[in-house]
Image (cartoon, rainbow, N blue to C red; front, side, top):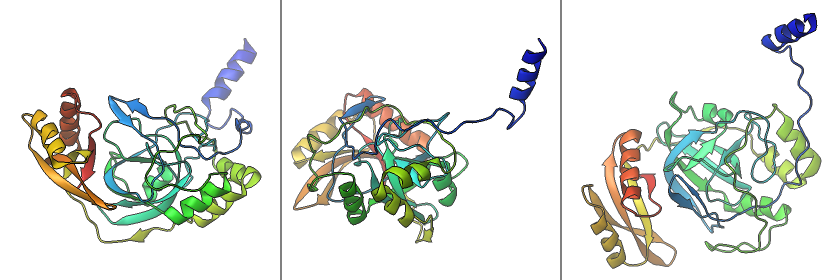
Length: 290
């Protein structure tokens, strides 16, 4: 009885329960793309990108215990890390808070967010650096650093990079929901021990914040990727009761078309419109800032 009381008292006191070292990694950190997967009715298609510069909504990663990221790094809430639904892992990106203009470079090493209409999720440290609001949702731009990403991925065994095309045969990982938090410094130790390429990438990510001109804007629900204006117009005709318009999207050597629904001036309103579009049977809507 006395022993049980002592153990119960010890467990109730902060810092009294001893914590052992983090568990060993399940394997080496690997270059990862993975298969398409679905979250909340929204399909996501991980692939390689020749370029990537996208706006949308950023959130904070929510974790509850020790776990590893999709490319086998130990998750560190104080790391310069992020989760993307589509970018190859790991990748180096610049995330900009469009509301205040704060930017910082981070390493994308996880899949997520697991909420429809969200572009990226960041660690609590990155959220503090970018001064995310208390609600944790903010308008962001995510821009791929193609040279740094290619160098990092090459150090992990990635082959020649293709331009904006899905890649078959690359190591696939189970696309579980984002992992959960480990001890501070553990991820850096894993990087230094097992992966010189990751060590170099981590050393280059200083956490230095740069400030650019803020560029907030209204939110739009976008259905993109139509090869012709006619196909986009047919989809727009299915979106009844919502303000929709056709928008040309210039990229590469041709013009694509998108259907934009909005504008909306709150996250709640944009989320509601996104759910309505999904309920109409229209695949893969996104929330963007324009």
